[in-house]
Length: 117
Image: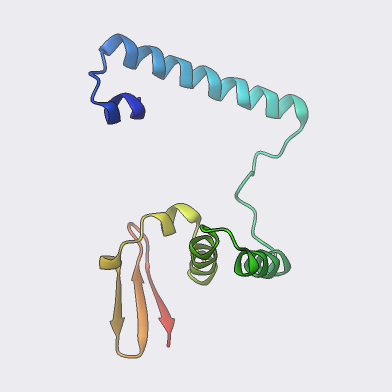
């Protein structure tokens, strides 16, 4: 759907309905596969261990990959704000400001988080 919009193609009501039906079927299929394999239903929701966080920071910092600096910044920001990645994803420069000696982050539909200087 996104690629069709991006390419400027008109999306018909039939195509939209078929894609919706397809996505619902895929969600059911994935849920069934997780149930049958005994996979966790909490994927991506468990707290990250401090040792894992430190190791990831170290590996990203030492990496020569061009995206590693951004990934490192994103991970550190997410950890220090104690936020989920989708909350950090929505942050914009307009959501960050200085108040006295604190760096303040305004998370959309969330509480205000202050980081002490």
